[in-house]
Image (cartoon, rainbow, N blue to C red; front, side):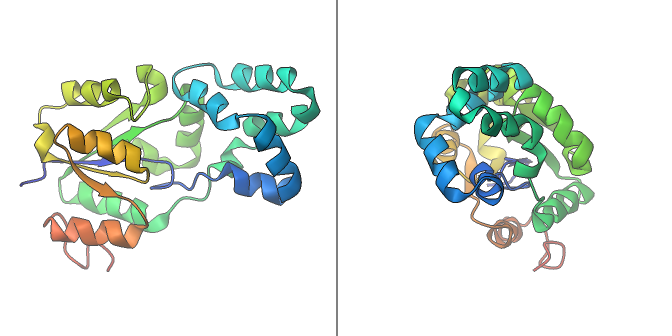
Length: 207
């Protein structure tokens, strides 16, 4: 099947997203495990990804959990250190596809303000033909609505989409809607898939 649109997730596909790693390096693994056992910080982040205000949501969680107040606030003040570094090979693939005239879009669970901040640090985030960001859309992967909204915004048929994401549940939902999918486990495997689909040559894919 011909591919008309290539869709990139962002976190752990184009930019590493490992909050636990940052906390381990700053407050120590033991303290981090204690905090994550007591507070569901990823659930807090899910609220941001659905459009809740970035700073206020984190500050509220900090106020509600005074034993970890300073550490929770790091989610805001150190956020860009958690969303780092970029994955260079993936960025090169994005740019190679666009250079070939392939339509390349993003579908990502991301807060409104945090995405705007990320755009200032990672210029490739403004290079997509279009970005579908969950915070702006009011829903997140893997809920079907966000996939429906993307489909409504594109002229190509869903069976001509090729979607790369690092989470199996996100991939499964896309596949159930007829999208072609790739479970991202590293840029080399993604590069090989793009070559296999005839979208890039081996050299263009950096292989």
